[in-house]
Amino acid sequence: MNSSTEKMAEKQKYRDSGYHEDLEQLRQSFLLRRLSPDCLKLLVMVCKRIDFVKDDHLMTQEEDDGFAYIITSGKVSAVYSDGTVSHLIRRYKPGDLIGGCALLGRMTRVYTLQAEERTSALRLKRDDFQKVMEKFPADISKITGSLISELAKWDKTLLERQFSEGSLQSRTLGVSLL
Image (tube, rainbow, N blue to C red; front, side):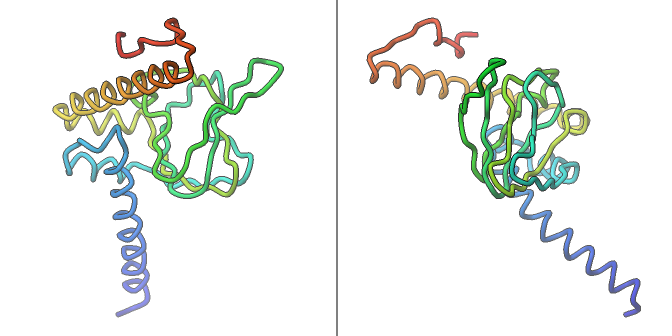
């Protein structure tokens, strides 16, 4: 083999190993797991691997960046700032999909998502996602179904937590009734 052929083979080998890992990450995410294999394969091709260092922002409160992330390594935290104080809302770990609703349409971020340590993620852009979904219109209902299931699960978990704490706040419930 000549050197250019060897370089091409090496690049393809590298791409293939990352491709299969990335495909599995997408396949495991709650929002995308029901999609057809061909749709997932195309989505993985438009994903971008991004590395972050401690304190980098993956998304910023009050912005609409149009991205969703699947954490592949490291840890990130969702932080809400009320203008004077920042509040830790939740931590995310590898395998978690964050910001999936931004793929479906314009959405201003309610939280800042910040790397707690060196973190890697797959980033999917709204425009790319929507172009892929145009090629697979039947999969849109699968995404809708996944999102509805997740919202109902979230609502039920919140309800059960409030009952167990004896602090039922009916105004904070009912997202599944939307």
